[in-house]
Length: 217
Length: 144
Image: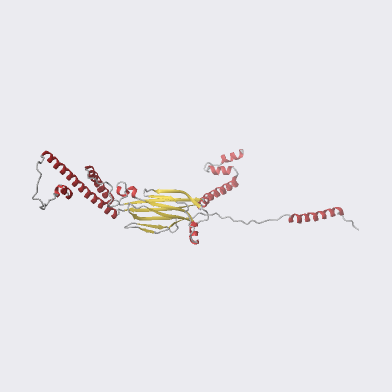
């Protein structure tokens, strides 16, 4: 009988090592667990769109203002004609059409004019009695702007525009003294020149604002 | 290092300095690496502004407004002018009356009357003519 070359003791040691390592692996696997985090990140974008509540404002006489919004909602063109004593506010909303909240970072006045002032009114107040649809629309509004158009103050030579009086309520007290006549004569000549200046008013004022938005709350 | 430096010097002067450096330091492999680096840098320069662009937005408000005179205001101003002119005429008339009365008083002082002026009999109706051109009003005539 041929005798085995493997020492039975070594064989037992190897087999017991295999069994112990295997069982240890099973044991360790019971003490471990894993969770899978499956995440996808996409970059957001900012999309600011202009909203005007009215497309045309028809005022008294020949006064009117047209608001033409570009198809992409990025450019608002205001065109119209007004009287020198016109003083009105136009509300412009900036809607959020993107995935990142934004705020105004810069307002550039590319073409300046004295008759227009652009103000930021913030996000505006939400009415408690608003309907669900209105609330959704209000939530879309990121910024509310107010455009004041007031040409009267550039016509300083026409004092009449800055006086709070009406016909039948003369500004200058009429006195029977000779000084009163002088005052009246002065006022009459002033008023004549004011009428002439006022009749000659016919000019176009151009303005351009570029409003930049970036991420912000 | 010495051999590399010698390598650079040995190239002809027609080749650009960048090519010389590439060939000198690392040979063809280095050239490939540098090309990939340059291309990736160029790609970054193209992609980065596009990425940043989506985090910014801008809107434009343009306006062209014509200012014209208001006919109602012109009418108001002209009405006030007319009113002021009327008031001035009235004031001038009043001043003329005051001057006239002053001159009458002066004349009376200069030529004092001793006898009272009698006009007709007692109970007769007397017609007083108001001298408009002198600016004497009815009140003043009555006072006389």
